[in-house]
Amino acid sequence: MQEPDSGPAYTAAQQKVIDVIGKSGPAPAIPPGLAAELRAEIDAAIAPFTDLLPDGKSWENRFFLNKQSLSDVHSCEAYYLGGKADFEWNSANSRGTIVHKAIEVSINIRGGVFPTDLVEESISRLSNDPNKNIGEFLVTLDEYGRAELIGECSSLFTRFLEGFPPIKRAWSPQTESAIGLDLVDKRVRIGGKVDLSLGRPPDKVIIDLKTGAQFGAHRDDLRLYALIDLLTVGNAPRKVASFYIDSASIEAEDITEGTLRAAARRLADGLTKALEIKYAGRAPEVRAGSNCRWCTLVSECPTGQQYLAQREADEGW
Ligand code: SF4
Image (cartoon, rainbow, N blue to C red; front, side, top):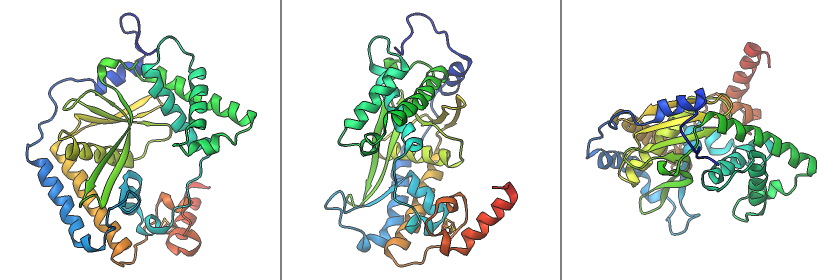
């Protein structure tokens, strides 16, 4: 389905993706000792808390940080520590997972398959997958809700096919691949999941597929994944990119020594903050921002209330 029979007949958006992330010269040089240096910086940030950390003897008994919690602790420490509502699946937040599954399967499926059929099959598989808790939500949908979700996801998936070039097996695609950096004898884990990567180290490109709007934090998320690759695989990707399905647009960044140093500093700072407030008894600081809109602490947080009132006055919502 994905590989055209003959020469490329790319849409303008597909051509733009190829122009932006295609190989056009050697990858930026990364000093050979950089991985060890950055690892030492991160280890040093954790060292003061070694006696306070979980023992790491089981998967549950670890301190976890992912791209979202790292972003949260830098945004508002109180929100990171206790302001997040329990996650619940719904039609809006399940679309990304379903479309990602359809994209994953579309790379390898043989023969022509209609996007709607692939989306419907993806929903069926996810509904029956005991390892995916999205299934608990999908099985509750009535016929109308299921049809509506299929329609929304089919539109997004078709939009992806129009905007992203057909993915060839020769590009060594990896989809939905889990990555993780274990620290301090596995007592700390920095984890994540890469939506799509193309190419092999050192020419790899890591791509986040976005079904929503652009945020500055997306660049930081991708830099974190590049850093994890450097500290685990031993090679950083050549480039990272966010592909926005709605707008069929791509934002990419070369991975350089500078971006890796910035990512390591942000991770080390975030670890220090998170460990101080979670294990060392420091009171969390509050910092108003977009998280205030869904923070469970807002009713008792004057800073957040003031921010929301000001925002309402400014924007009329
Ligand atoms: S309401 Fe805003 S400032 Fe207050 S704790 Fe929540 S996210 Fe932080």
